Each structure stands twice: as structure tokens, then as C-alpha cells.
Length: 415
Image (cartoon, rainbow, N blue to C red):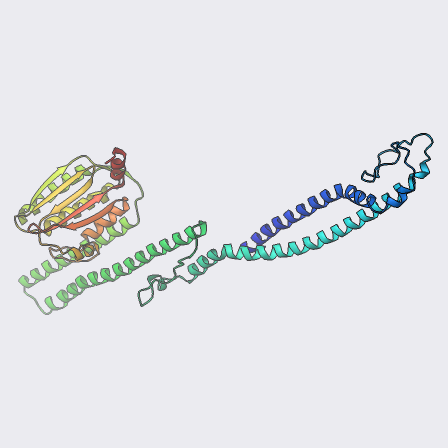
């Protein structure tokens, strides 16, 4: 009884055996209740006939009809002048035969019923054991699959086919839904593990480059007895490399923090954050010859103010830096969420998903973490982030962010 299959077998088998015992008892009682009357009727129509023929029938009620019961509750009265000994032989023969036949039939019925019940109990236990195995087979498959999983086979076979999936076949039910949910969880885990490995490899590569530059500048640029002008150039170069490394590290920390989810939520006026973010980038936009227009309609989101500020900053900075002289950036907030559209080079449709990959550089400087941080922060707030290229000649990209509260509001208003 230490396994679920044993417990289910005991439960199913016990219920079946109990039902068989109840059925056997009810049948035995019902047969016993009417068996004597049926036997007496059969016996009196055959055996006592010759005995009763010798008994005179004066027309009274002393001699019962051959088809009436011969077990009266009290002695039947005989008419005057009718000797009782004349009818007693018929009673005696019929009653003795009826009792003997009834006893033999009941004994036979009891023995046969007990034998059938024993076979039924054995068959019930075997059937219950088989049915419990059939019912619990998906659970065993799920357990074996979870036991086989590791970081290697979770990502799939070398041929690209996924490993460690249940893919349970059968009609819809609780266990089928459990198996499908487990497969969905494995798919999400696979994506997370793949993204983590890819992110770690990219981060190691990006951080290795500035370290190598710093080492080369220190070993080569400052070798010997450099003049003050050379030292100043090397110093400026080292500071630029350190600033770039600091931006990468801050981006990594921010990305990691947003992927862990939100610890607390508070109402944030996203429209005000967008307006302040545009003002903060106004000088850089003017230097690049880019015009920024803001249409900030009210939008309040329950989330983290620091992360949402970084989301808007990365969106606007990305739109300004990946633009062209004389271009524009349009920022809109409102019930539909956030939309940032910019002009610039034409973006091929197939490269749009790559823009959200960490360390994907498209020119314009930066560590290549801007849109990946935007997507991670959006997901932490339950939002959907989508991007679409703008057609030529304007080119550029349009990024839309839709928050859950926005979807609920639209559905409630019938839009």
C-alpha cells in the first residue's frame, strides 16, 4: 500500500468485492423468502396426490387444495365427524419433502454463491490492479520524463528535435491536460535555458573586448617612457572603455533585475515619464538633427517607476540614435499603450526579431541591450512588446507596448 497503484487497487477492488457481497446477500435473502412456497406448490401437485386421494372430502374446508400452502400458522379446524388422522399423512409428506428440498436448494445456492463471490473477488483485484496501472500510466511517464531532464537534453537533440517531451496521446482529461501543461512548461524552460546560455556567451564576449582593449592600451600605449600627450590620449581611451564597460554592466544588471519580476507595484504616470524622457534627450536629438514630438495622453500603469523610466529612456534613445539627420521621433501614450516610431534606415522584416536579442548591434553606438531591456521590462509588467518596420521612404521602426490594464479597459468599453 505504499504506492498509489496499490491504494487504487485496494479502493477499486474493495468497492467491487463489497458490491458483490451485497448482491449475493440480497439474492440469497430474496430466494430464501419465497423458496418454500414455490417448493410446496410444486410438491403438492405431484407427490401428495395419491395420499390425498385416499382422504374423503366431505366438502368442508379441512382438506386444503393441492395448490395451497401446507404450513398453516395454526391447525385448521376439521368438520364434525372428520377424523384428523385422515388428512395428516398429506400434510406430513408435503411438509417433509418441502423442507428437505428447501434446505438442499439453499445450501446449494449458498455454496455456489460463495464460490462465485471468491472468483469475483479475485477477478476484481486483478481488474483493479490493471485499471490502476492504466490510469496512472501518464503519471509514470511524467515522472520518468522529469527524472531524465537535464540542462543538456532540455535544449533538444542535435537534429533539432526536442527531448524529454511527454506528448501524451489519448482523449482529453485531467491527466492529458496535466501532461500538456508539463510539455508547455518544458518549452518555456527550454527557451529560458537557451536564452540564458546565449546571453551568457554574448555577455562574456562583450565584456572580454573592453578588457582586452584596456590591457593593450596599458601594455602598448604606456610602454617605455611615453610623452604627456600620449599619456593623455591613452587616459581618454581608457576612460571611454571604462564608460562602455560600465554601461554594459548596468545594462546586464537591469536586464537581470527585470527578468526576476517585480517585488512591488505602484501607480506610475507613464505619460509624464515619457514627457520627461523626451526632454532629457532633447539636446542629443538636436545635436543629431532629429525632431522629437510627444503626444502624451493619460496612461497609468501599476509597476516599478524606475524600470518604466528605463523602458521609456531606452525606447527614445534607440529611436534617436538609429535615425538620420532631419528625421523625426513620434512618441504616443494613451489607452492604447505606448508607441514610439522613428525614421531611419529601412529595416528588413526578417531582422526585426533579432533587434530584441541581447548585444545585437545595428550601429549608432551602445551595448546592444536597449530593446532587449525594453522587452524584458515590458514582460515583467505583463505587457506585450511588438515591433514593425516602417515602409520606405521614411524607414525606421515602430515599437508598440500594450499593458494588461489597457487590454482590460478596451474590452470593457467594447472596443
